[in-house]
Image (cartoon, rainbow, N blue to C red):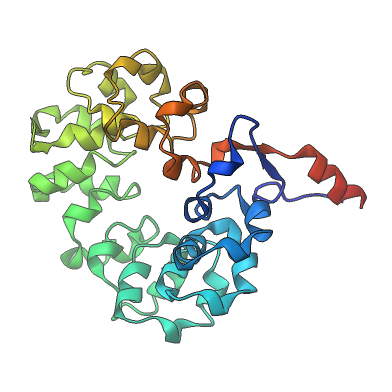
Length: 289
């Protein structure tokens, strides 16, 4: 018997995570918490079901509890729920179509309903490139700047980017080579700081390491590739601000977090998939039961 190990069912909390501090709404976001959630559905309030609706590993559980879904458009944001979505398109209102335009998995539905899509969000959809290339007059360059698969379009149309477009591009993991050549276009001011967004870009580490004076530490705390920088600069983190809030949800920050339990933001920690480890006993029981 083989087990599917990426569905969050054969996981358990690390020993250092105190279950008595559980925040159920936050845990509902956690892709590795399915086995715990399945046994504690009675503890979920409306907020919990809303968050669970988005959890890609919770689809089997949700299918058995469709009556609990109070916001269908949130459920339709679930990457693993496309088969349910196709049977329930009548439940999509205008807001639902707007949100759906953003989701890569829904592209086969969107291309059949271009009269209903929101081009602002479709411009950001990485799977919508063939549609966008045929409709450049409808493209929103601001959100296209965030599209990781639109680099070839952006490179030919940099003159169409306004200030907001460059700000948004700072979040694009595939645009680093463009940004490196245009650092002069990035603003570094207190109330208008493009480095705020660049600091969270996982592929921007080479730029950030050369410009630590411009780094926004709050946003760097959410960057999964910045742990080596953060470990050397923990003194720069504000204990009373949002630094530990974002660090608590960073899946690669566990070595820092487990040594600083007094500084954690528990709301964010409970949504962090890295607080779980494989439960080999549960796997063995499932195989040999």
